[in-house]
Image (cartoon, rainbow over all chains, first blue to last red):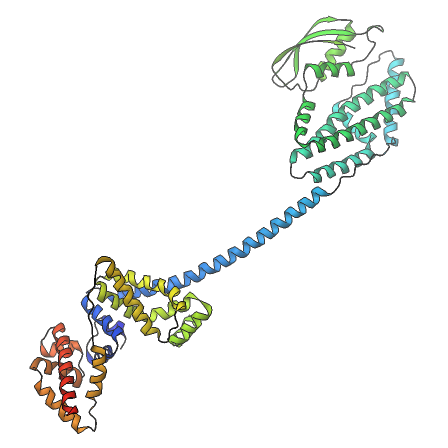
Length: 321
Length: 189
C-alpha cells in the first residue's frame, strides 16, 4: 500500500496493516506515519504541491544552467566579434594615406566653355553693353567640376582616404568636403572673372588659369593634410572658414567687383544695410560712391552675397577696389 | 515523459550514481520525490506544523544537491532519514535550548519480535507464545491478537476494541515488549 493512500484515509484492511507492520521495522516510515497521525490537515494536497514544486525546481535549475551556458557562449562570441572589429578598425587607421598631385590639363569641354565665354564677352564689347557674366553658384560648381574632372577623381580618392583614416570622427569626413565646396566657388568665380578679362587680353590666360587652379588645388590638398594632422583644431578651422561677416563681405566685394568702372580710377562705395533674420542684406543706403556703376556693382554683389553668419545686425561698410 | 518514465524504472542507487556523474538536478528531483511523503511525515512529527514541515521539505531538497556529492552513500533511504531528522532537530534547536528525543527501541524489538512470532513447526515457541499471551493485561492481549494474528490495521483495532488510536498503539507497543521478555525468558530456560 502506498503511503499516499494511507494518509488519504484508506487506513483499513490488510494493506494498511501491512504498511503499519512495515513501519515497525522502518524507523523512517514509522516516524512519518506518526507525523501524519499527530498533525491533522490535508496532507495529500500538501504532498502533491511539494512534489510539483520539487520537480519544477529541478527542471528550472536545469533551464537556468542552460541559459547561463548559452549566455556565456554568446558573450564570448560577442567579445570576439568586437575584438575583431576593433582590430580591423585599428588596421584601417594605420593604413598610410597616399596623396598625389597630378597636373590638370583642360578638357575639351572646359576649353569649349572658355571659348563661349570669350565669344560672349567680345560680343558684349562690340555692342558696347559690356556686363560681366553673372555666374550662379550652381553653374560655377558645374564649370569647376568640368574643369577639374581629373583632379576631382584624385581629390575624392584622397577624401575617401581621409575618411578611412579617421573613421572614428564624422566631422573629419565633413570638413574637407565643405572646404572643397567653398573653395570651388571662389575659384570658379575667379576663373570666370579671369576668363572675362581674357576677352580683352589674349588666350594665353588659359594657361595661367590652369596654373592658378593647380596652385589652388595644391593649396587645398595641403590644407586637407594639415587638417588631418590637426584633428582637434579642425572643427574650429572649418567654422572659421564658414564665417561670413563684414570682413568677408569686403573681401568678397573686392574680389568680385568689376574694376575700372569709374573711368580708370579706384572705385569706392560706402554703404549701410541691415542683415535680416535669414542672413541676407536688406535696406541698402549708399552714403558715398565714386560713380553710379560702382554703386550698381556693389548693389548687385549685395544681392548675390552669401548668407551672413550673424543675422539681425546693422552694417556700415566702405569698399574700395 | 519518456525521461521521467526511464527514471522511475531506475533504483535509488542507480539514480544516485547518475546524479553523481552528471549533477543533473532533474535526477535528484526524481529521487527526492520518491521520499517526499516520508520526509514530510517525519518533519510533521518533529515540527508539529504543516507549513513548517513543507518549508523543511524544500530546504532539505536544497541541501541535498550540495551534501549528496560530499558523502559516499550506500543506502539513500537511510542517509536521507538521518539528514531529514537532523534538519528538523536543528530547526527545533533554534527555538528551544534543548530537545527531548524519544529513544526508541522499537525497531530492534520488532526485528526480534517478528522472529519470535514465526512459530511454524516450532512447538516450543508456540507453547511459549500462548503462555505469554495469557500473562499480558487484557487490553494489550486483545490489541496484540487483533494486530499480529488477525492482520488488522490500527484503525480496525480501534473499531474492534473501542480504544483510542493512541491507546491501541501504546497497547500494541507495550504488549509486544512484554511478550518478548516473557518468551525470551521461557525459551532460554
